[in-house]
Image (spheres, rainbow, N blue to C red):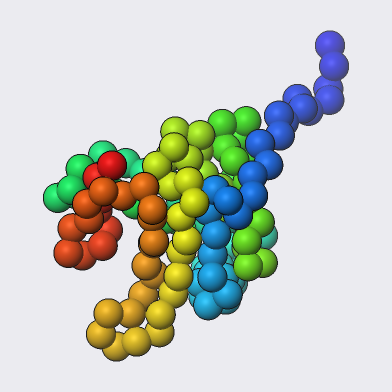
Length: 125
């Protein structure tokens, strides 16, 4: 019986053609990851059903190793993980960050969205 650890299958490697962070978004994500103690982790971008337009963006920090169902993109100094199902909806999207009192925060510019809600967190295709 072998005592070796099982080999972890690698994620697919993607490019910024899938998803891209602007420099300001990359700086903010890196700052938040450092603050939350996940500096060696990744930003996970996922699409789930919900919201007033039908689909919703979810972003979170993931400190677990990527799986074979993930696509790994390096953008603006940040590792970004997108599962293959969500990749269908976010292809060619850009994540920006604006540090403003009103209308600030993370904004996702998604060319695949045919409609968005007023809050910008929900969309349809």
